[in-house]
Length: 116
Image (cartoon, rainbow, N blue to C red; front, side, top):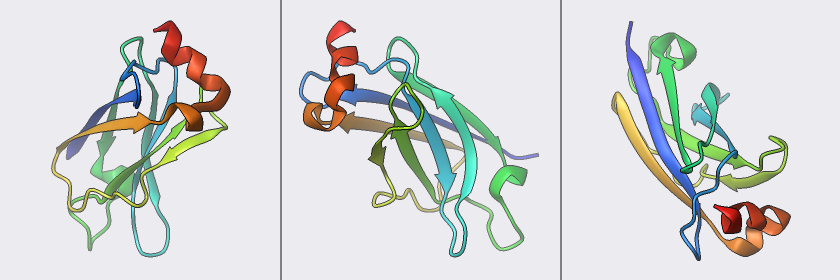
């Protein structure tokens, strides 16, 4: 069994304040269909951790995932960031990410950053 640990922090870009309670989805990019490796909510400090097993995304042709993130507002519906343009190719068993979302893009969710 091969375990992959994906950690990261989600912050407001301008203030660099943590964004607690935001929903993060971690994907392995593939040619036909991207596999969901796992999900997590950010903690009070804006950090998240996702643990994934090779069985969650792997196949005979792929030994290492091509990882990207999507970050949603606390409602887990409103997409605020997609890292599909910044895929971490052939990621190792540990991958760290820092996502900074501009205040204007946060919209009504910007108050979460101001309160932290």
